[in-house]
Length: 126
Image (cartoon, rainbow, N blue to C red; front, side, top):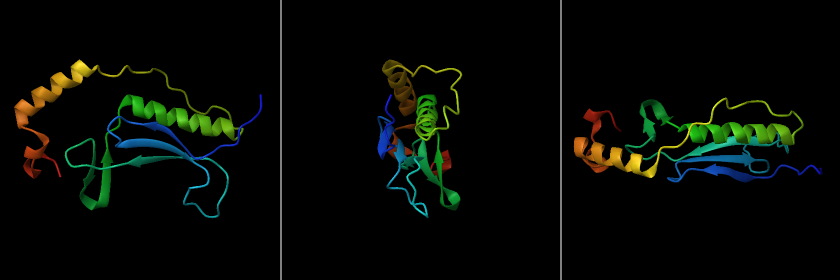
């Protein structure tokens, strides 16, 4: 088997594009530069979502199990590519919720608190 040098790539992107796992080699902001692959998260905060800005300049992220599994997979791939071997193991892969399940709870929550545009700070959202 021929070793393939690590490259910049998107390892995973969520459907809502709020959670993206990248492997970066040449585009990292590290000094001094190196060809060592880094796994980074790119998260886009949006009001009233699982990725949101909170007080103190922080970004709060509520990843799904699938997203965390993809992060672990990307870290393992980078470690294998650099000769370290697999570092982490996901002990159990959690199935995603079905589209019907997600739609049911979206309807329930919209009826309960209104659409996302109706949220305000009294309900714990920024």
